[in-house]
Length: 298
Image 1 (tube, one colour):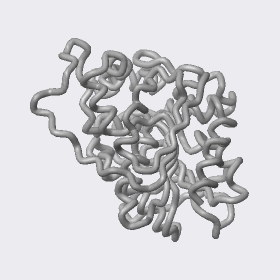
Image 2 (image 1 turned 135 degrees about the horizontal axis):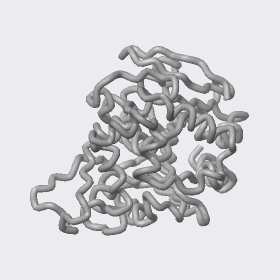
Image 3 (image 1 turned 90 degrees about the vertical axis):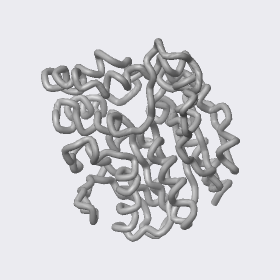
């Protein structure tokens, strides 16, 4: 995938891929943890003949800027990067596409951008809606157990593990990266090399450390806290496609229940025999679902 670099007005520099006709409808692809813009290579290859496809290495990842300090990775700054990127590229309207952390960001970008008409559609893969996810963390034993690795990522006592063995050492300690063998060997090796960069490792972990999501320990009561105040999550009125790999161990399919209460125009696509990294594991199914959605909502 081609690479260029762009400077944003906030001082952040991002490496990105920008391919396809410059006057075509725009898809902005956001990768998740612990990946990079290559996460969407199968989709970009499929759509670049009729869409302008833009995929940044997000703040803290790969060769993009890695500001020090957890405070520099708060959701408002990460969402702001995407709007600044679109403006810097002269883009007035776009469809946001995201997976994992990129999907979490896509929810925020869509909610913020629908009012102005900047964001016209949203496509999200295996990334939970913020209101549903927080509720499940309080009430669902399955989701809470699956998310304990996030507590490990936030725990500063694990910093020594990262300094000694890079991000891969912490991943091996805290999480199981299922079905990584379905990724092309060259792409997997690219990730392994990037995980050796200690600055990038801590920057990526700062996405977890700056998040307001509360992950209770396993021995906490399975109920909504009495003092819990839900974060504001405005309903999405733009057309939204949610795709879910049904064998996801980190984010089980119960995250898709009740989405229609938050989205006016929802298309929900369950993808069987796929885990968390659905765009790698089932690129054909993902491309087909996106094709149908983009055609219907053109």
